[in-house]
Image 1: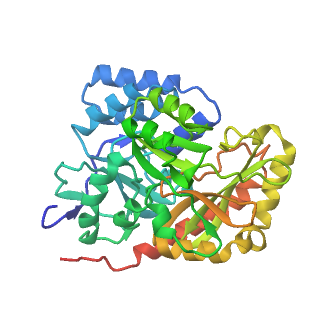
Image 2: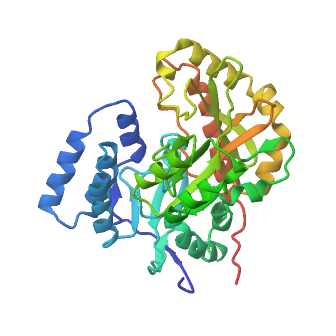
Image 3: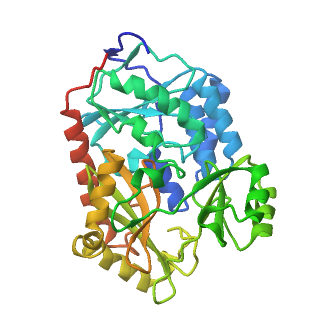
Amino acid sequence: MPSVIELADLPDLPKIEDPARLMAMAHRGQALDDVIDDRAARLTRNPSDTAAMMDLALVLQFYGRRDEALAFQRQALARARLFADTAPAEQGIRVLLFTAPGDLAVNMPIELLLRAGSARLVRLYLRADGALPTRVPDHDVAVVAISEFDATRDILDRLAGIAARWPRPVLNDPARIRALARDTLPDLLRGIPGLHVPETWRMKRDEIPRRAAASDVPGGAFPLICRPIDSHGGKGLARLANPGALAAHVAAIDAEHFFVAPLVDYRSTDGLYRKFRIALIDGEPHLCHLAISDRWMVSYMGAGMDRDGAKRDEEARAMREFGHGFGARHGGALRALAERIGLDYVVLDCAETRTGELLLFEADNAAAVHDLDPPELFPYKGPHMARVFDAFAALLGKVAARPPQRNP
């Protein structure tokens, strides 16, 4: 890190399209072909248009064109490291985001948490081995938007030193984000009453068949779940009943390392699985969605919430009653968990075991929290999520008021 970071007025930064607008369009199923055509035309006119490259890097991911998207991102980041909003708010808190190269899962989609016009965002892309710029736009608060992945660990390690000397207050400690890895989180949270975090083992491809055959696996027995390292959203995740099935699953996936964990049957008495997404904002829990499914691998998009009024009614009730329902039942575990994790902002995917414990699947600072679902189907979400967004805005203001660390 340079000995001094100069906070400057940099009006000529490349300006990218508002990611929240593009994400909202993709979520609603709106075509983004016009955006792709426009940015491609801009690059024809100006092959060095880094903002057009970054817009394509985002939009192409919505079409499943990940490799092509990341190629545009690499081209852009070879030329520029700082990117501003296309139409920044004239007022509002000034936020500098520490971000990392990669796909949508790598960085916190903070835009979805912010009310329109409430913040001015600038993204600073970091690399583990790249020099920092000596000048950055002045800002009120910096936010570590980078999630924990094997691919980001070196960046987070480097950022820990940078954040400790940054000239403005920083939201979220990079070293604590590092501790959210699936295989280290159980140790971090061990012993909290009322909380169950399944043991998760990191295994190499070539050792899995041997250890599975010897029953040297988490929990000592099947069924197990297995996923490649750095996967999210259920990609490559499978439920496996025996050593042969585990070996076959690993053989079919192009990855060298995997997470293996015991399957926890958390079905409710009606046979359905319920997964809660909770944002811990300044230590306080806020329910962001409840996914209800007849499948063990639950995702909100795949749970059919938009097709089932009874499920939506239950989610609305869970949001109304969270403070004296789920949140109250697991209040002690959530408070202890928040203290152990020690982050200003983190998102939990969790459930309830059959014995009434809080079952934690994952803690991630970059999980999506939003109100993009159609209000005609989810009328209860807008008012509820507005309170979540207000809590996050208050957190930004609180962190901005802290003195910077300025450690030597």
